[in-house]
Image 1 (cartoon, rainbow, N blue to C red):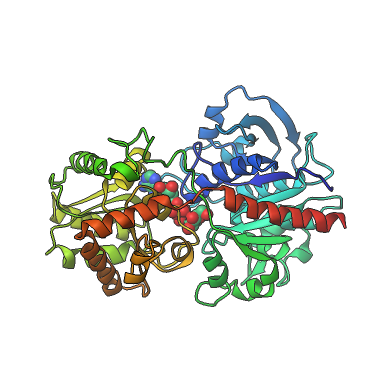
Image 2: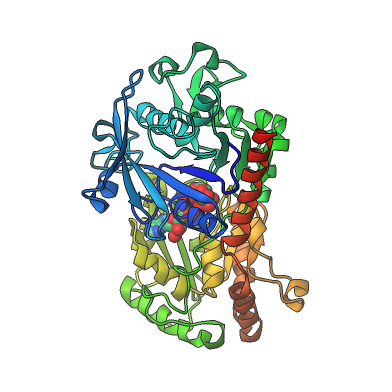
Length: 490
Ligand code: ADP
Ligand code: GLC
């Protein structure tokens, strides 16, 4: 399977703009497009959720996949991403065509058949990397993303050669995809795969463990997270396996779509700007205050947050520190949704402080852009953060982040100190301990800096000048692919 132009199947459970619950949706759209520019023939494989099928009505059928074990038959449809990257849609109505989210129903409960839904996706990915591919095309590399595609490397392992090499990218180690061991047979895997040296994890079948055990190469989305997940604290029980495989594990920070997230051209914000006319940010702040019903106070520092409201993201820390900071003239706005108690804690603060605190529950692309553009500071107090995209957006929008020094946050933000201000590298504010006092101290430090307009402008411009584009990370992925293809051919 040696090819001068690697053929990569990028298998993913979400891809913007069709289906997105978090950063993986953004990565799945942007990374394959960057790979194309580097002469990699990447195709994306995505389940046919209703929103995906609606975008491609009348799409041509590329092939059919027969029923196997208890996985139903499926059609593969031809589509493409807005970037022009070919998209293969796995159309299997019994598994994917239902109202609700990609992983959960409208009430927030996991779909009971997620094992079959993503077992099918993984099987199709592996099939497209085998000589038995039902399409004329087959992949040299099957690139899997998170547990939803984690079974593909196991399926490939049990596929007779010639077969694709596999890459497993961990976007979040906290989600394991654990199911009843009965699924091993139901998904057509041999009984011997259910072993400690296989996909068994604490008496369950784990899709993530399958990916981590069987994939030829492992990557995760920042160098710091690659080190952290090899420790018991951040390893979610997989740290032993990850330490064993550390020679195969590479940390590659995510990029961002610098065309879509560009304050100079962003059609979703009130007033466009760049490093030379940062004063125009004020119009965005005013628009944000109006839209959210907050007092129109240009002089009040504005703290923004766009996030899943979960323990991972530290939204509870924000709810804990805000009351103690309200002696200062600041305003705060959060957009997101997630765990009920986190939503409730933030909402009750907003109810108690109208005009100063606003909390919007839900997913709102336009408001997300306006918060990035209109806020003065962006909060990301994550307990862990594999990479994180918002802190890169916020730096690009001249909105310095206040973030915990973990994972990709530590890799993409330079803390403000006398030294980093002097040498022109400072871009934000980092704190160490995952506690409310540590977050409060970092916010106070940021507000002190905010009161010095010269230093603040410098900080904004430093962040705006950083290159967070996809080209450098995409090159690193190409190196991983080329190493695997070379090893297969030798
Ligand atoms: P994660 O994937 O862990 O949620 P990331 O920072 O990698 O975190 O990516 C989150 C992505 O989802 C960003 O593009 C962010 O703007 C977007 N996002 C998160 N919540 C919302 C929301 N409520 N409305 C709009 N966009 C959101
Ligand atoms: C996950 C992580 C986030 C990362 C995203 C894309 O959702 O929580 O840190 O940026 O995946 O890789």
